[in-house]
Figure (cartoon, helix red, strand yellow):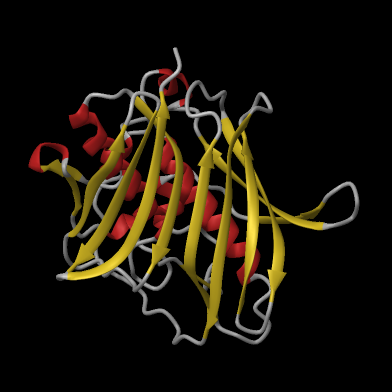
Length: 272
C-alpha cells in the first residue's frame, strides 16, 4: 500500500532519492487539460538495460506519480492509499537516457477516491510503459518523523534487487526484503511501488528456475494492508504457466504472517 500525504518539506523522500525520482510537477497539455509529470534518472543504468531487466523499478515511478495525481484532488481529506496498481511494460530493454519521463492524468474522482493513468517515455521518445492506479482517500494522523540513522545508498546502476536491499531465497522461489528505511513512504511503511518492484523480482526469479528467458510484460497488484518497515517482508511466487512465449506467476507478499499484497505477473519471451 502506498500512501500520499501532504509533505512537511519540499525535499524528496529517501525512496525518491534511491530511485532517482524528480518532484512531481503540474502542467497542461495542448488541449488545456491538466496533467502531472515526473522524471526518473537512468543515466547510470541506461546502458545496462540491454542485459539487465529493470522493469520492476518502473512501478516506483508510476506509483509515485499516479498516487500524486489522485491525491492532488483529495479536497479536505488527509491522504490517499493505493488499492490497485497496474503496469504494462511495452519496451523492457534498451532504454535511452539520461531520464525517463512520465505523464499522468486523472481519469475520475469521487468523494471516496479516484483513478489515474500514466505513460512513460525514454529520452528518445519511445513508449516504455503505461500504468493505472486506483486509490482511496483516507483521514490520517500526521506522520511521525523518523530520526533513525540511514544505511548507505547503493551505488548507481546496480541491479534492482540491490536497490531495495533484497535477497533471493529457496533457489529463486521467493524474495526477502529486510527492514530498510530507504524504501519507506511518508507514513513509515514500505512504499507501494517498491512492493510492486519486489513482486516483479520474485516472479522473474521463479520463472528463471523454469528456464524460459522472459521479460515482464505486465504487473497487476492488489494492496490489502500497510507493510511495516521493522521486519522482513517475503514475496513468494507461484508459477502458474511457463510456456515458450508467455508465462504467468502469482506472487504473495507477507509480513508478520499476514498477507499484505498480491500480484499477477505476466512475462513474454525476450526478444533479441
